[in-house]
Image (cartoon, rainbow, N blue to C red; front, side, top):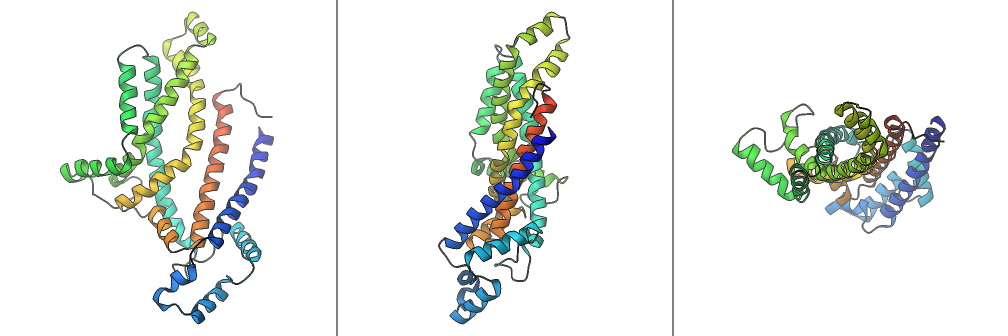
Length: 309
């Protein structure tokens, strides 16, 4: 197991280097001039040339990329083009904290509701509860964000006056409920369907029939022998759904006025703020790689039959 973890960690810098190279090339050779966008109406050739020289934009591409990678390894993502004199890490740190809290709350809703529903639906196969649970979860999945968010705002914020329409008060503030529900509800159907299918496969195994024939209690068979093995495909889904949930959070942050990375990244894209764009991309790629590594490790914890060489 240790050798496997070390090999995966050694591949992480290679993947991040490839991602950074692609994003850097797209930003450098893409349409638009960040200097011209930054200067706006005050653009002149003299000012633009001074700004390019001060930021090293006149250097060869390989020098710019090498300098960026070397600084990024030390945690320095450079200065923002849009906010002069401000470091990207200084601007991005608080916003990443907000988005991470929102993502955690949404994940608790998605996994905490979807996985038990899928298991319950599989155990109750053949009864009216099974199609009811599946149909209800699919109905939630079919509701887009631009429909779910206004409905939640109108019902819970305007009609019932339980929470504020927008704003942010932290993870333990009630204002996180509506945006977390908006992100988490569509994912419940996915986890319900995967958990149900996996549980049905495990229910048909010989060792489950043997455990029941030995007279083991029902709750022991369900949770120790069935649910534990059925969680393996769910762990895979958790690793791959990380980037999708973050993408959905961008839209939700705009709707609810949450000061996360969503609006900040969108403004950086329009302003051609390359340091911010690259920092967000690298952090997202690193999070996805680390999340999948953790999922691979959890495989062996849940199922002792799995061992990595």
